[in-house]
Length: 290
Ligand SMILES: Nc1nc2c(ncn2[C@@H]2O[C@H](COP(=O)(O)OP(=O)(O)OP(=O)(O)O)[C@@H](O)[C@H]2O)c(=O)[nH]1
Ligand SMILES: [Mg+2]
Image (cartoon, rainbow, N blue to C red; front, side, top):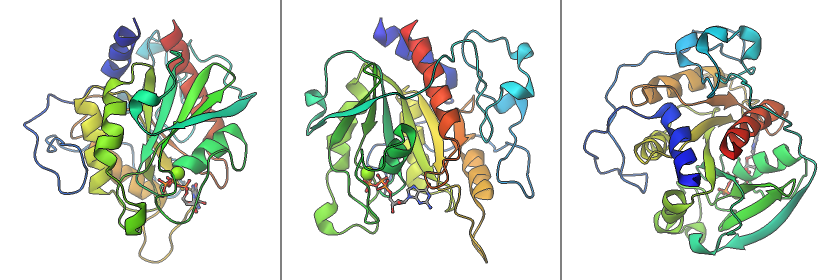
């Protein structure tokens, strides 16, 4: 049953049929080369919240696309709120434990969301922001802080999962690990995984390793929401703004995804996108439950 629902959820944004995988120099799992031409969200010269165009919207199951109005689209995202968005409030959170191996993770069948992304992208910070507690998940300026699979039980009913980051460009040798063998089994075998939140740093231009990661998830039918982090960081001078980096990332993603995956802009510093991301997760969860 769980597996069937998972397939239904992931089908919402299946990538184009995969071409033969090409060895990747950076992302530890094999990935797909990009194939389709870009197109995407309308250009937004000033505001930091790009407005999505209709064909790129994420419309949840049970909602007729013709019924979608602007008010139903969560701000700074392409996500439409449908009939399954229930109560998204977080009333309680507790750290359940750290697992060294995927097979040691909790076995109680509760649905879960996994935080995935480059080291230092803000996975642990986002967990703290979502649950409104400062140090539930440990954060650090130095990459490689999170080293295990950490389960946080929310409202005694679902899990947030903090994972080690991939891509240790600036991490000390001691912080590096065999990320691939460590977490690959988790993604491929975790039946209770509702969706992966793939965190992408919006303060820097698109990184190949993140695109490879998104493509790997797509090829393996793992449901993904793109969560752009650090949207508060406005680069001056030559650096691009978060909305420009996000647009570039989405153009690259749309080459491989027939239907654009859900995406949302966030900042753990300002709380941008917090409530909206929770609403999105709530509707995915409720769909899962039903
Ligand atoms: N400006 C800004 N800084 C952020 C944001 N999110 C995280 N940071 C900072 O980025 C650094 C890394 O944050 P973490 O949450 O530890 O990152 P992580 O992805 O969990 O890193 P690993 O555990 O090493 O994989 C910390 O110094 C955070 O304060 C954000 O939204 N805005
Ligand atoms: Mg971390």
